[in-house]
Image (cartoon, rainbow, N blue to C red; front, side):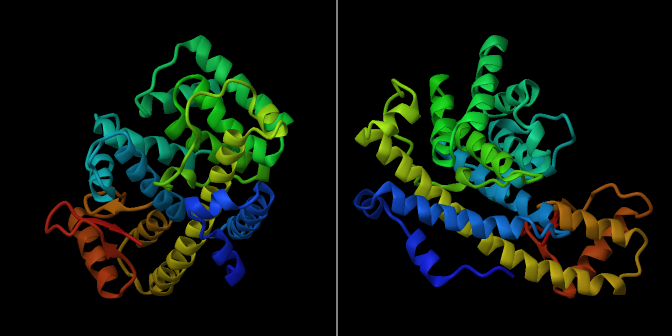
Amino acid sequence: MAMVPTWLRKAAALDAQTVAGQGIEDIAVTAGAAIGALDAVVRRQERWAGAWRQRLAISAAAVTARQAGRIENEAALRDAVLLTRPGDNVGPAGLFLLAWRRLASRPADELLTEKNVAAVLEDLGLTLNDEAVSDLTDDLRQLAANTGTVETLVGAFAAAERYGFRRVLGAWLADVLLAQRLGWTYAIPLLGAEATLVVGKGRARRPVTAALAAGAETEADWAKSLLAAQARAALRAIDLFAELERRADRLLAVAPKLRAKAADVVVEKLLSDDAIVASEQIAGMSDRGLRRLFDRLVELGAVRELSGRATFRIYGL
């Protein structure tokens, strides 16, 4: 397990006042170290990395939905998606979760196509015509190819702002661009869960890179805030990784003891997703058999029941 050094945890504990008092170079070093530690975790490519990314996705969805004026928490979002049939209406808040699940489950190098960007905008309740979607994806490709790490982070939010969608779309785009820059197979939901993320006031009037080069105070403060948020989010993701590693190890340890038919399929589903419902249709296993298997896994301490209900139960690491 790649441990986070104490100095990095202390340096990443940045509130707004601390951020304001530091130079952008110091905060960039902290963010770079945090992302480096996260990169080491991502490249381990653990069997249960899918569950990790999806657990981060639901956290991001809960925060972004709340910022959009919704009241649904993580449990309600999980219900909205898991207790509906594919293609059914999952509600406005459920669409936020679908957007972040898309980021966590599709290859990172496919996420910024016009088709995917249009789908994410729809999930987030945002609207752009086809020409504007094309322009946005062109902007993102240029941003990814021609700017440095800090400018890419800030530029993702600036690109979203040019179309009137800075906060939630900016976080989604920034996470995708980070994954593409680092060569990750899948993006990691990070900035969406930053409830205190500050992304500046008003619309950018000029290119972000030019503003930073000119030393514009508002743009520099904006960049520092985003870098600090990225550092916090990276360490939070590493901590969740460590927590899920212990739970996944327990599940994998008891897996050979499971004698139910298709138990191996259930184990893989638990390792690859945030949660599954007790009524999941699994070939070779009846509803009753699946419920018995989940009862056994809970008894062995290998999974948790996440809904707290007596019916329509949901299980995950």
